[in-house]
Image (cartoon, rainbow, N blue to C red; front, side, top):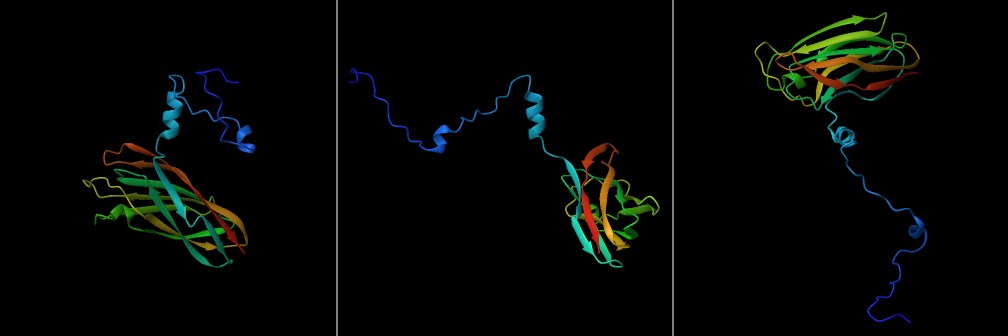
Length: 181
């Protein structure tokens, strides 16, 4: 018998496997881990990506890959290094895709290709005196020929975006896999 003024134990509403699952403890922010938690919650920043991420082409085919910027703010200049497998791919051309000139500003595009190493340097720059912008969509398009059967990649290497004062805007890049049959 239960003594008066002492509530009886209520039946547990949880049964089966859930009743034996360990309890989940919420994360606690302390002075020692606050920086790590803040960094984990910080936005990724500027990210250059290749579109499409996977390319399948027959040998001899010509194809294009867009380089797109997401998360870049106050961007004035975009110097990018692309690395590609010169045994599988051959560089053809690069063209402005319009994101850095979406406000109508004329954008200079220059490139230098090292076919032997498979390194393509591309630089886009807004006109002197122009402000920086937040680009939306593809920055530039690179055209390749699928040279020989095999698997290779196109990757974004050294990249450091610049604002109108030429201060660095850190950016990360991605990679596309290329299958030539």
